[in-house]
Length: 300
Image (cartoon, rainbow, N blue to C red; front, side, top):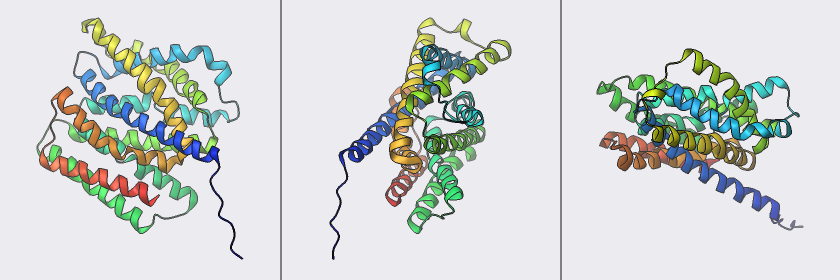
């Protein structure tokens, strides 16, 4: 006897819709983050200055909610892991330093393009399931596209592009652990806010003030305020909430897969804002990475 088909309940549909909306919003903030941060490190501000502005604003906003929102259901070592692998001082410094060496197109390809690869590898390791044929083909496309982009800059001898690539890949590896851990420990968005921003502000701000170089004194106040507001409210506050919603409702692979559009959107946004126009081979690599990421989402 045929079994009646069950329809998804309203909560499931709502959760998926919320996850998709959150992931799209993160995509927009993420693309703007690459461009705005690249513009920031090209001023007299240092990477440490921009990170300090980010954690100052985000930390002040989150501080009143520290006691109420702290995730007491997870062990202290898991809280430390999430704090250090989230969009905190390690990730942000890798991104800011990388953007001081390589263009926005490289950041989109190697940071976001590698994110589903690292996340998928982590999921496969935990679940003991190898990727299927479509997933393997998609991963191969991403790798080939990244090689096309990277070989252009490295082959042309454009400064320390290779260092920027290495920093972007490191940021992706760090972020993949965070995505997986958010879902595993069932961390809510408001908990992720205090978990990332407060410990990183307490750790990084003294290090920056005592040991890191600063260009604050030579930087116009308008530039400082612009970076502080965008970095603190955008990637430092809103993106943390949205990222957590996406990870909880779409899962780690689904969340990482929405990075498919970032390489292209960030590269396009950088043209009018920064005047960075990728060469044809770089566009081919960006397109191949984007297509591979789309196929990876479909395979998922």
